[in-house]
Length: 631
Image 1 (spheres, rainbow, N blue to C red):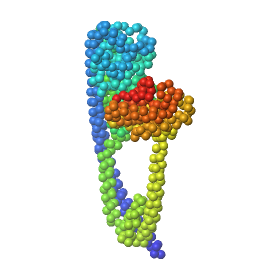
Image 2 (image 1 turned 180 degrees about the horizontal axis):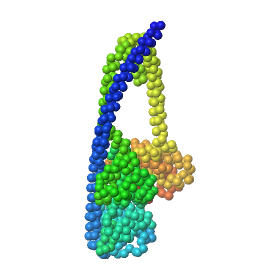
Image 3 (image 1 turned 60 degrees about the vertical axis):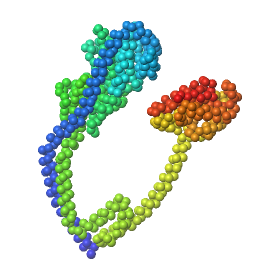
Image 4 (image 1 turned 30 degrees about the vertical axis):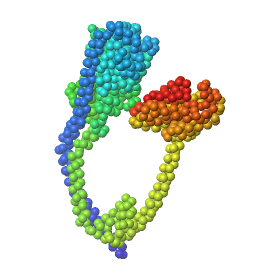
């Protein structure tokens, strides 16, 4: 009977609380809805225009910066043109120019000439130092005339004088000629050495666009985006035809690397924005959503071979020719996007930025949302007052239970144990619930502590096993030396630091005859003895680089110190006295040849290996059982 009375009282209080909260909430919601509707109707359009203006301001620094870059590149083209004409008039009919051509260029295949590789690697000729230059003189109908040789030398000398100053702005500087010739200054890709022997550069749109038949007005031009197969780069090119007395001599040209372009023009200024750069004809130069596969499939991207929906829509708008003034904001011409279209002078590119309409609407709704939030805050304040006014005998017990339940949900079991029901004004079922929570918390704590102990034990065991596996993964199974994986890891680390280390590569002399005559088991034993000898002789890591090739990364402050260390290792192996009666060399014991080279900071590991291996090769040809090093 008493329980039914308490249930009736609880039900009555619940109905009263629900009724009060429902009435107040409905009133507050009505106020918020009316205020939000009024705010939206009066401020949304203005807010939307302000958002678009801010988006335009975001683009201004990028447009200014790239416009200045294109202007500078075109100015560089003018300078390159003037300097070439001056040198051409001075050099083209000089016998010395023909002599230089004959000495500097070599025929690499039938009808194909290239500038010798040392002009890319670095060479001094008659007191003048050339570097990063390469040239390709491809197949042509006519033989190379004296004038063409002089013109080629004039172009090469012009590039050598001017191109190094521009490498921070362009990928390379080059001259192309209608006779299927290209001379390049590039610090990264020797195009003239990489070009296919059968390449006809005038068959492709880039150089073809400068020919008199294709460009009678002799206008400089910026190409669309294309893939340079020989250099393996995505690029755009600025070309300036150079004529003299009505004759097409060369094109003064610059390649701009796609990575440099995308890092700025197509960098997303806002999340979910898209950026496109198109040339005057509507060909796509760069885009933030341009896929690598689409770039690889086509040399240039136009509506006929690139069917990306946004690009198709933008290209159609530009093709209509109605964009007489820029910048233009198009809010309804593209599905689900707002387009901001600007024009970059010089190459006459269209710079198109697309923002989702949904994002702009979201930003324009910020002010109404703030008002809604204020209304919600007011509702919450009213509800707090109502909660304070509701019968304390209902609110307090519920808050106590909610607090303890929250502790349990957050796994704060110790707080539940410390929370004594006797200190809280709770009666009946609330006190029973709190006591039950306390017992549950105690069991959870004990279980959690046991689990943590087991996890800690398993973690320690796993760490020890991982350390053992890591050691096994980096050791050679036969010799106990560090293996090739460890060598690659440590050599890569050495190239990233400036420690003055040297890479030593050694090879057991005439080891194949030893294996063939004494047997592979004897060969394995000999290899183990030599490995153990090197380990005992040096505190440094010794690596098994190949079958009978061993390596060490060692420091040395001077050539004398390096030579002493290497000879000590060589002599120690010889002193093992491992008999080898089948050698061609005079001594009849196993010996090693050693080559070493410095590890240069920032170089590729393969380059350090190549240089050390070159010294090892010299040691072999020196008679074996020798040390040769580069200091």
